[in-house]
Amino acid sequence: EGGGGGNGNGGGERSITGELESCAGGMYHFTYTASRTGHYTLSLVVGRDKTLVGDANFPVEVLPGELSSQKCGVFGGKLGTGTMVYGSSVTFGLYLRDTLGNYISCEHYKRGFSHHNITEVAVYHEASDDSNHAVWNVPARVGRCRDNVYHDGALDVLDGVMDVTFLVPRPDGESSAKSTTLDLEVRVNGRRVKEGPYATEVRAAQLDPTKCVTTGRGTKGGKPGQPRVLTIQLVNELGENMTSCGNAAAESGAASCASSSTKETCKARGVRCEWIEITVTTGACATAQKVELLEAFLQPLAEGESESAA
Image (tube, rainbow, N blue to C red; front, side, top):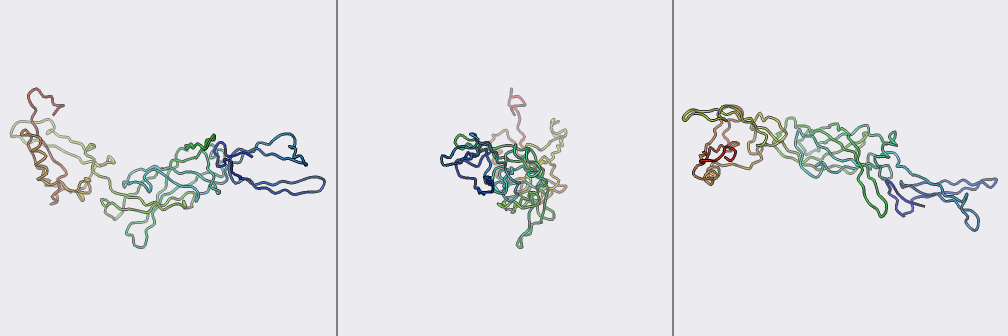
């Protein structure tokens, strides 16, 4: 009797089968097999009146069996559900199952570490016949275990989830600015997680204006007619300095930025707005593309207006 308290999968469903064997001398052997984890009471009755043996029940706990890589699964962390960035760190959840599909809670993972131990997790991509994308295989780091708690009537069901983190490799010999969809797989202890592959969009890191850095005397102003120099370092969303414009529209995440629209934006700010077109003349960004990654608005302060309000 009983069910899956604690981490249970049991409920009121029958989950034990047994076989009774008669031996000589009034002795019987009873063998039972549980298919679901949980806490049970084992009752033995004899005679026509079905009297309880020993006038007591036996408390029995059924623990999860050996960890099954194929029964485990993943969720969250953009794996199969979102967009990843080349060179970024991604964390997803790996939920734990035994060979019969029973939940393995964090407590049971620790108690049965010898047969639940996760020795290796890897995320990989296998190129298909019609794919030009490189094959890659990266190790992942297993972090903390946490229990997702579900309520089944009066029972709390604990579902153990391991945090797994990996670094999305940068493409080698491919255009990193191009967004693509890859069928990613997860391997646990050398065996593929059965529910994969996980179709996931992967793209290059884009320009993040909030992380860009401006330095130079031009930030302090100067005398009329005197050129002032600014140095602007473009930085992407991963906090990395951008060393090449590449495809300017893709790198900046903008479809286009025509001069006419820039002028109109300036015009809408009022007569005090002066529009300045920045022409890149040297370095990797000196291209003929009609896309401005940078615009400058020089706007005089009104009388009594503070610099912070400008």
